[in-house]
Length: 165
Image (cartoon, rainbow, N blue to C red; front, side):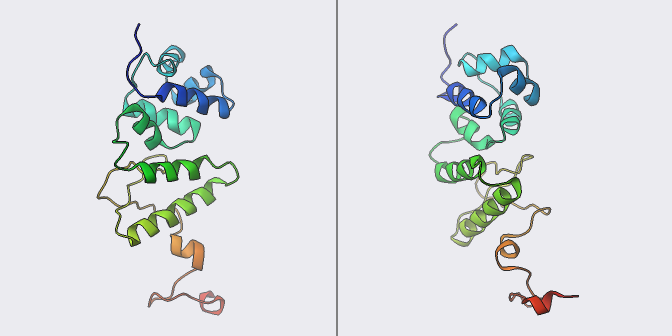
């Protein structure tokens, strides 16, 4: 069977799986796909759907957008910088999950401040890369709160003496 033109998706998935120290079977179980199907994806024989890529990305704890770009689902040129920046942040083993989410929120707030719209979050908490939409997550602290602390009603920074209730 000839290899499909899915970029280097299979090689990338294999590399990510190995760096996560997962067997093919372990990743297939975690992603909810069959072992043979995942093997065919890694060998470039099958082109997975966006849903399957999202499940695999979640199991690997990596950016779904990176997989979408590598599979040709997202335009690689359109959001390459944002996708790569998000992927690097999410792949950093020295940061915990909360730190990664706060850092992504700060990054997104700077992009928005500079006139770039921010991608909405998908179920994994990663943006989908869709242009013209905003990312909102009620469960995470805002970048302003994470960096500067709480704000007063007029929008100024609250000092320690102002935050006591």
